[in-house]
Length: 371
Image (cartoon, rainbow, N blue to C red; front, side, top):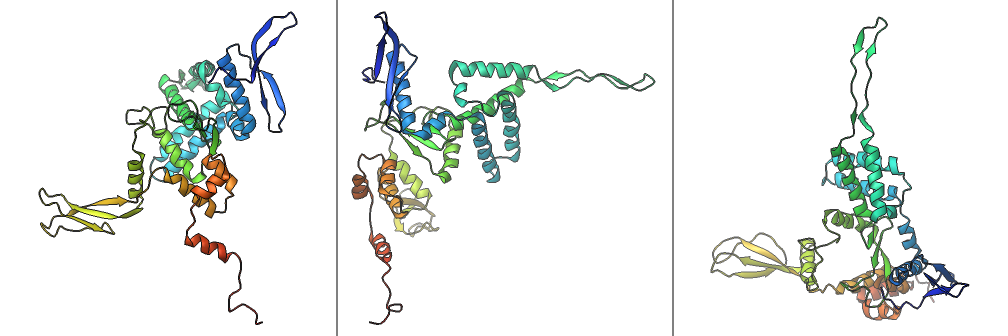
């Protein structure tokens, strides 16, 4: 965060001394200038608070995301586990496990508990308080001895058993899974948004500003699965959990994805017998044998020649074909001018031209009235 934020000021007191607390100003959604105390004496901390105000005013969805509550995160987790169980990727008992364990968090913290309160030292205090409460609860309540009217014991007394540490640790696992989905830095599946704020290891983007981009509803389960599978703070980390290198060959990653989806130019069938080196290009991957040695040949997909950056043009074109306005497409692609989106990124082919002229409703020869 830069230290030269010109929207931060310090006020002078009546006695002439300078108040060490920084005040910041920003414009709200109606264009009014709002000045408030940041409650910070450190300039960098004050700048972060002021930028957050500005962002909340410009992006109401982000402000709602920051007010997400515990029940939102738990419902998101349970929905994900239920879909996995229905698809056969998880056992039905797994869904029951998370439903039972997260229920205790809702009972003790409350459904309207803010997720933001589970961050930092404040979050640690809430978790410690939860653990203390659970340790004092009975897993099996004590039962006194029961006697009949003659004073004869009919049921022996039973000592109680408190909730075990193993049970509490499983409840912590369930909470971490819910928070992992709902609150992972720039991905917020509660509100269904991805925050674009940085460019690799730079603190800002090329345009110098951040944006919230909505996630398409059909894609959210895949994103949730990736977040739960990741063991680090990154959604798609490297094999060791670290951030991927800037030299990562994304075109190869895209090529493998296209091959798995069957979006290929064809297949190259290669004989793997040593010294044979027979190769044959075909349109399908049906089983074939080498004409030289009669050994089975190995089909290798030939992906379409597409760069990772070309996906931006694909997105713009699909949005245009769906009838989405150029201003909305501009916000998705984060362009400074909608003309850039329309003229460069939106591709028009013969089918688009045909669909456009057919909308004119020109009467055909069969329906046209005679002159």
